[in-house]
Length: 169
Image (cartoon, rainbow, N blue to C red; front, side):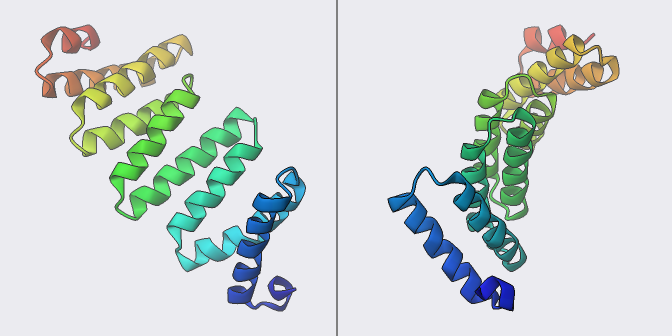
């Protein structure tokens, strides 16, 4: 009711309470949980409450089995955390996505970029190398070349000549 009348604060409070009730007493009510999230998510996004948005996206992740949806949700979480200058949490989310979605070039590339900007050259090299292999498998030569170049740069930062030469084609 508060949502329909435009009382955002009350609607957010009611929705959070509804989620607690669902968790405690109705854990199998996915449709109800989705409805509550639909009310709460735009409110917390507009309020800039990044931890709450990330938590709601985590709930959505648990409710879906669609790989594309999972990828979009993980990348959204990472972007939100990055926008809040929480690179450590953003990288942690991307690392989870890297494990959950091992065939995603986009996840591997985003993890590599985030790791590179956080001076984690070993992680960057690994992520870019995976992205390069995946791009090759998908017959995307321009992307493969780009990712091999980034993997080589990360390997050079590690002073790993063998690894850098493997990607320097």
